[in-house]
View 1 (cartoon, rainbow, N blue to C red):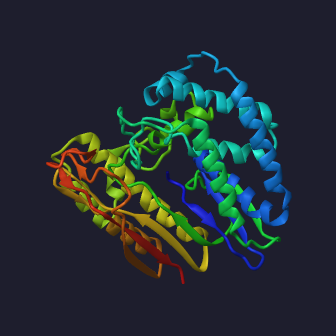
View 2: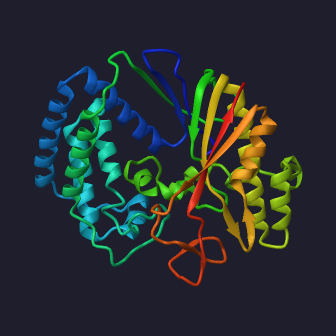
Length: 361
């Protein structure tokens, strides 16, 4: 999306301010913050969560899944076998029946629920892209849920967090200048790549299950590089920096839609670079995890474009480090449209990405 995660560390104790536009990420951040700071403060959290877990298990075993066919459910039927869909409905009903709406425990258990949705589906294992695997044999829903619950509790038992720590989670558009964002020391973000799938598509399971939208495509509005919002290519493409202009000009003889999408992505990232510089304190750092790709023989150098954008925005120093990502996906090839494929006749995708760092003097 077009909004990085921003964090500020003023002094001890640690204080964190996070801003995200995606409701799914808000859920994850909030539930993790709940654990990080509540478990170190209140030893009873684990006891309380265990009591809720046992009750959820009991209600789940007694609950019959209702037959309903909303727009969201119809889309979910594409991704799930009937029994998996039924069991997930039972589990969600159990969570909502057992835990009060405003309870901090509900966020925690909804996060655990969200984290098992792909594993319980026919979504291709380890693939972040929306790719169906009809032969996949998913594990039983409640077994996945129990394992995820134990993992989340165990992970936080190993943490040593100051009891005076403070966390604030906000949702909003990072590029909306009407939203006040405090000066921060650190920005960390992993923006989407050009020619990537819409991020709304990647989070569609959680979006639909948690009722954040009846149609996950509604969340494409405002996402970085998306053409699903106001954008006049003819008047705006001239604002591209040198690297962006050079790449877009090479796409002129290919699909008009693809050229406009790449240009929009670059323009958004240039705005992100300027906004990041504005909200950083002196000596602040901005970390971007980003990768390159290719479309019809044209190399889309996202990292180089971002580096130039950061320099143009005023960063005194820009550093880059290469990072291997060979175990990130199972499909190591792309077709001539730049999409992932298992066909070995396709070209090998890049198995690396870059950490681009902007330093503000």
